[in-house]
Image 1: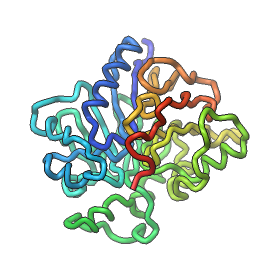
Image 2: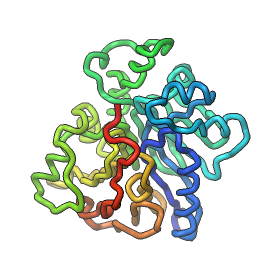
Image 3: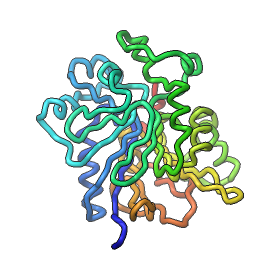
Length: 304
């Protein structure tokens, strides 16, 4: 029997734009001529159940309170969406479920850190960003704006738990691993867009990637599309990293992979269905999509 074929779509920071993501997945299915089996979101989903809460906590972006429709049963996701936490979430709703929960039918919070097997793929994940001051502090219940902000930072024990994992197909993190921009500079490759600042990302996530050595890493937070590989030296396994823009422009906010069993055989950006990478090919800046005419951050630039 041939191995099961899967279409997996990664989505950048949704920031409440659930209707847009659904429309994008419809378009991707039409372009590839097959269903999207799994949607993976890399944090800053902002799945606020109450519209008033959503408007208050994201007033700086003015996003609609779209998740309330799914939570109240007025709409339902057409395919399963799994997400990690970023640094902008409804942390009050997530706090008591560090191992994950289903917030609405087919809308799943994976949890703060761990491993899930989804459609036969081993998906590891680490929610949040790095804040050195809070890295070794206990996680407090988010009862105020200050403690809610602290809930968006990962902790030592969470990183250590993920560090022990091996044989990982996809690692989901919110913040980039540090050093991938410098690696691109060192390789001297031409890019269809200016390189981001070399300091983007954090060393803890980089160490995690170097230790776990997942086959793919999907990340968000910095609202830029980026492609780079780590490893490959002296027979070391290659880790391919796809950084996703926030959900404004599909060409840079969506990255999809088609699998045969647990083997990724091809992938592409956006929802046109065009293949940007095939198994055996290198993964680096040359695989990025062409920049959009309007720019990729028309609704905001760097995240708070």
